[in-house]
Image (cartoon, rainbow, N blue to C red; front, side, top):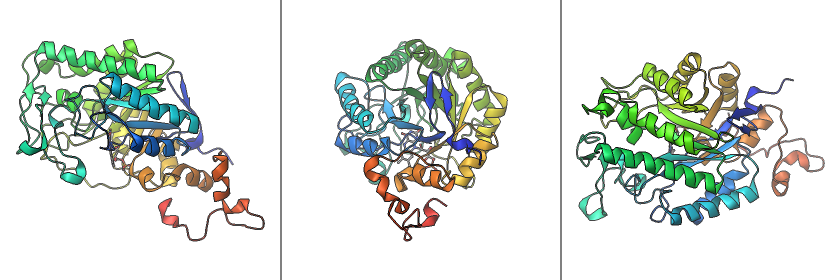
Length: 375
Ligand SMILES: Cc1cc2nc3c(=O)[nH]c(=O)nc-3n(C[C@H](O)[C@H](O)[C@H](O)COP(=O)(O)O)c2cc1C
């Protein structure tokens, strides 16, 4: 039986992922003033031996005011750097697969509540702060009106991304990912719905994101992986669509990026997304893949191992990222491998979780396991 494509290696820059399953970046909202802590140590330590070809760390912010919430992680000072270095050192002792970090700035969506407290803008008694954006246009009704960045302030943001990239290099990440989706600062520059500038950063809306990308490329080693999360649909009238994602991906390739992860949405409060069905963003990934010579990761409602294999095998994307499926089932890769008839290395202490390791047992999995989880 040929090896399922999902379980074949893929190269991102000089980094080889042993398979094409990626743990999608997921904010934990548990940091202490930007610093990762024991929550991240356990959460990521646990996922470090999940078998995923690449584990991405959550959106990690390049300035303090660029954090989405009070609980978001940062990489803007030596305290944050030391905190992440501690977590990653533990992960390296627990697993062998590559680890990446997503660098981000929330722009006008900063200064907001953690999801379980409402996910709205911080109220006056919740220690809000002044947000920044390309234009003084709020995300939605009630949201803070951001301060419009001056050209000098835009340059300072580029420097902040570079400084965080250098810190990521020092910590020893294999991959850095530039967050340019989900309505955060870079996406705010890209979309005409949030960028109303009349200077060069408005007439050429890719100018700031590409300045960041080029500066990161300069400071990130070629033998490690560099990518971006991009947006293929604002789901709102007059917003970005798949052709804009193609144009941006083409420019990122030209700058020297190795991959893009194609996502969508979350730019404006009034967005109306299409039906959220299995693989709802895969057609966007496929369009980018057909148009641009860059590795493409698909994301969004991919949870079934058969479906994940189908979209990689048919060439719609090169990799898949899973977020909620990993929160629900950190053993997803082990189970998917079994489904596809592949033996992967379990941590030896967990090898006996397979019932067929027990003398006389013919079952691979406990009978009570809910098959629908890995579907
Ligand atoms: C708890 C949680 C936190 C998330 N945080 C981030 C993040 O930090 N950066 C990002 O690009 N996307 C983030 N996302 C979006 C996911 O990475 C992913 O794109 C989205 O959930 C769709 O994939 P899924 O259907 O596999 O969950 C988050 C999603 C969840 C559920």
